[in-house]
Image 1 (cartoon, rainbow, N blue to C red):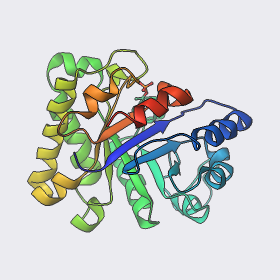
Image 2 (cartoon, rainbow, N blue to C red; image 1 turned 180 degrees about the vertical axis):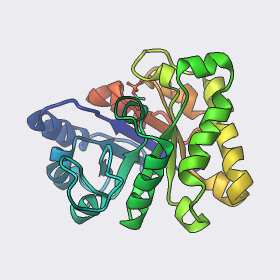
Image 3 (spheres, protein in one colour; image 1 turned 180 degrees about the horizontal axis):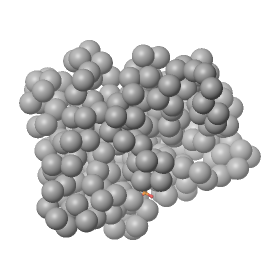
Image 4 (tube, rainbow, N blue to C red; image 1 turned 90 degrees about the vertical axis):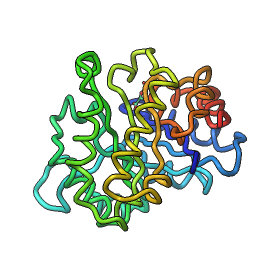
Length: 248
Ligand code: PEP
């Protein structure tokens, strides 16, 4: 394990008042100094939560536009996020791929936007159930990574965080077993190594996502190639997520 990262993805949950009291309460909690804590929150809350969060918590966006600026009603650009002092953004979450038809090509442009404005992309990949059942999940995941990330030079690539999130495990209560997670993380590291070499592959943070809870985080984070988690449901419960941050 390299970096230790516990990232929460709130999706479209909580009111502003609930979000503010969550962060105020959470920031009084204890977790090891070497564990990086990230909350990806709804756009309208970014600035106020960033002000509340203090320097132990990173407030991140859940998405950004593939364009820099202009006539794109409803979109939020990486340039805007940077101007609001946001440093981190999730790109390519399976819900964005599924419901908003974000293709590998669009995600490539989003990654470029994020990097151009100095943001850290948390790039999500992972296979749906039917792909896992067909046994082609390794191929799909390497395609997702190659098509959206492999145009980057080493300098840019080393700024990424990758989250492996099997779609069949997201919000379903079904978690990949620690062995399944380890197997895919090692595979992803190998794919990265083949293009960028062992140093970059070894230091790339790869998070596991998919029904991570307080009662399974330790087993998952104990795997050699699992550097932490991207957590949906359990990141909305202060005590549960605090336990997850203490599971390394
Ligand atoms: C997610 O939203 O990225 C996620 C993994 O959700 P959950 O933890 O609820 O499965």
